[in-house]
Image (cartoon, rainbow, N blue to C red; front, side, top):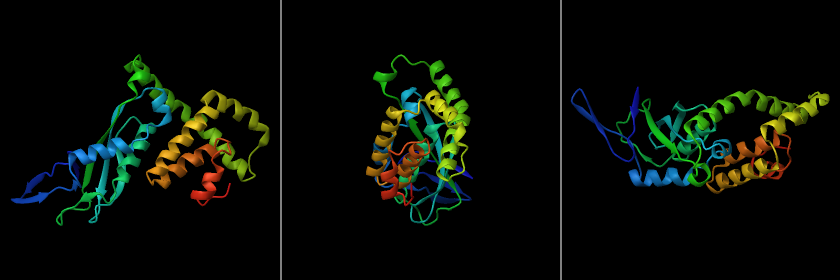
Length: 225
């Protein structure tokens, strides 16, 4: 059963004459709006390509207001989806849950992404759709790069293929500028005490053949480079 959550408003529904209160974010609508806005770290691909949109995230709450089973109900299937999930998970423990709340019930929260207007003033809807299509098409190439380096670290890669992988990295724009941007992104997540999100970014850097995140992985992620 899916229920749509309207931010910060406690709704009541009548079932067989009995009213059930809905969970509410502590502090109400404005507090949730401000929390989401302050926590969004605009993903690099969508930021650079001026991709905007509203991602609907479905999730459950346990009796302590912790987020469980978060998933995308509606989204473009790109990095914005991952960030929307991350932000919803950060609200864990910040919900007031009525005693009669059914834990199997899904709530749905929209997360809005608006790109930098100065950077994206000339971007069109056609440009955005082309970028979304390109993101999906490049996933196979990205997986080829990351799989190669994962295997290389394990001593299983065919090293004769490295020139091909390096060419793919160039094609995908996996360069020092991107790595610097992702490091900044990971640092912001670390400031938010989202260690899982930061480790995901650092691991990605490592898995595209760079050692620039290895010290962070050693310190925070319990992984050996």
